[in-house]
Image 1 (cartoon, rainbow, N blue to C red):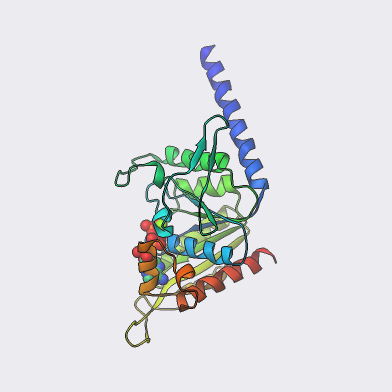
Image 2: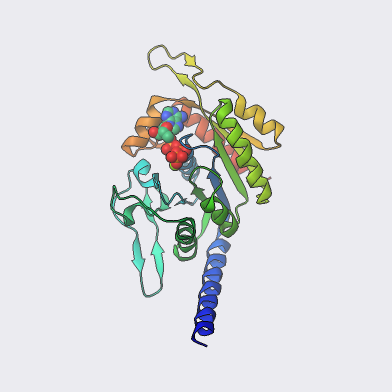
Length: 277
Ligand SMILES: Nc1ncnc2c1ncn2[C@@H]1O[C@H](COP(=O)(O)OP(=O)(O)OP(=O)(O)O)[C@@H](O)[C@H]1O
Ligand SMILES: [Mg+2]
């Protein structure tokens, strides 16, 4: 008897959470997940810079850091402080920096502490963010995911019901193999638009300005074509992208004329035109 009461309470709580998610989503026009088959290819850099490129076009933008074990978004945005919680209404207010709203687990855990959570717990943290964060009306909500095709990707895609997935890859074959898996996952999840960004596409030498194709070039574009995905552009490898990330001042904000910034801005433009087509 007690057990069935417990089960029915759980079912009620789940139903209420689902309703809160639906309410939140009803106020967000475009939802986009950013993921990759392989780690370290630049998902967070792409997420943060794309988000700011959209902010610069006067869109209302939110960024959900869905990487629970490696939450790097706040560091890359130079975000300080904590999100405000309202225990009575069970809501969380996103933080804001330079016009971009953001939620991440990073400010809620000690800086160097590992998050040793199994998949279901990580998924429930994302679900809670989707249910409880009060974004208000948004034109875009972007979610920066951890590498691979695991629990967080599945949960975010199922709960957030994104209209677009952006798969980030670097140009070399070893990354493209994993990227194909990620594109196929997005297809299986029936995400309507799948975009590909090729990052670290040629290093611009800070001394002579010439381009060195460290990881090759063009693989992302031809892969996108073969897989019927939309190619959103190539972002060059540039020291300023890395230092901007480390210093918490994304390059799109600090130097919009930089070729990497221009590539992020163009990728944002292509995303907008894809979603409004
Ligand atoms: N175009 C670029 N030029 C130079 N450095 C870059 C570029 N893109 C990303 N980086 C740097 O590469 C490193 C990895 O990038 P980032 O953290 O964005 O990758 P990620 O895919 O999110 O990684 P993870 O899989 O761990 O989440 C960072 O130090 C970042 O500053
Ligand atoms: Mg990342």
